Length: 564
Image (cartoon, helix red, strand yellow):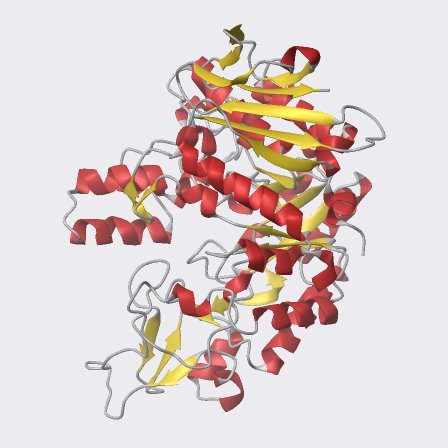
């Protein structure tokens, strides 16, 4: 098979959180026709694929990640005719569609689960049901099969009195884990993939796919929340290879979301010789502001740790032939400029927004842009828990208070961590609802949309949007960015991340890049300036840099790339 760098090195993927992207009918919720209306904007930005979050039939407990039917469209998002129109119009602009497949679990509203609740043995075997102890009842179900915890808080098991069984849900109680050990389940899911391929889909993103294989023997976890037993589970590679083979996915653009995974596992998931996926998302770099590894315990980002994680994954995946999906944000993450930068004033906001873009688009892998990132959209700064909609955030607001936090303390933590930080509507213009809808938006809109919006930025050559457009153009024009090796450099400050990209016999453009990024609100010594003068400045978010006693000093939040 083709080397991943040859296949994917010039690609850029744009993620659309459909609920918040563009509303075509004024009901306050984004939809499929809304995406079609904005295709020219996306074409102008220069992206190759649109990853669209789930729009399948769903009760929307987890905003579509609780799927009730993989082959039908939730009416609030449109119709199959709307999807077919989107596929045609995107294809006419050279843009591929990447659908988000939630195959670890289904909604408990899915017909399969409802048949299981009715006692049908065939469908009981579709899920991870475990018998309860004799004599268990709704009032006293006894202990669950294990002490594993749900990602959304509380036990990962739910008792069903009518069956006297527990079912596993690694996420919400309404999201029952499928039993991938059942070959009928695997056949059903491969058929779903073929169904959407036949409708013109050219790529797939697989939600938490490394959690699909559970251990044969269930046991308590006396060290953690249970994840060490099911993460990168015993048959996961076998099952993914089968899905790829039976779904006809080999050679397509496919990305797996990998929870708490390892470099070694991701090499197997993404290296062409294993015939699994084409790239992987890993999240270790987005935990450097978790105190003691706890998402809900706040800490300032540890940039030295961030540098080490990026270096390990970049260099390790390259050595093993794997391929990284490069990202800072998505529908589950706060905005990276708010998280890793300083958005308190316009200059800090602009530099911070362009800083994270620079490092993401110049590393080795396929960069992903989450909607609004190219505009510098920020966390909304909601003032009340009533403004939040996310099930995880609402659960943890209660959990944190149960652990002794005051309501204000709990709200401050939610404000830094909530998935809703990335789910506010796309800011198209300066109007009341940011051009997202003519109705009432399903969630509030940040007040800074009057300045941070697509209408203003597309026509401004100095805007964040224009900077991202230049980064995308550089990737498509520059072989060393597409295919070059990567090596991280020792910087003179633990607030600076530095790396180089090299490509022997580059067919065009430079053969070497040095990228320097100051994750600090103060001036920082970056690297020795010897030799930098021989290169040309390829791109920078500010000219705020100077030489001082043989050292290149970068101004606050400055990112720059030098080329030879």
